[in-house]
Length: 76
Image (cartoon, rainbow, N blue to C red; front, top):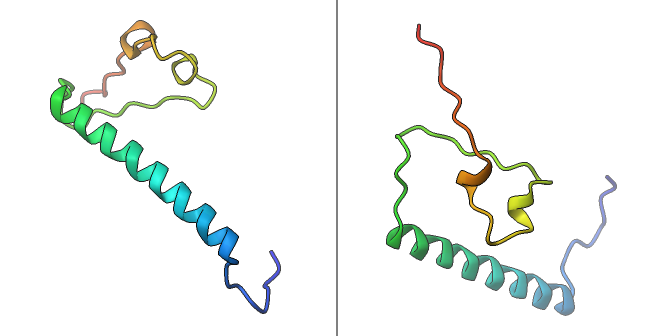
């Protein structure tokens, strides 16, 4: 990656970045409110991984429980 002498954003780039930040913040607020209203019932330490090609990302009616499965740790 080459370095540019002047790395200042143009006014148009700044507006676009501000718009993106606003969208991300709005989505984060929605996720937070949803979690407060519908807290997780997963055990502490659980991890959910959703692949970038998952149908969950395309279909808002599909539930994680429709396609998910548990992976249990090996006992030491």
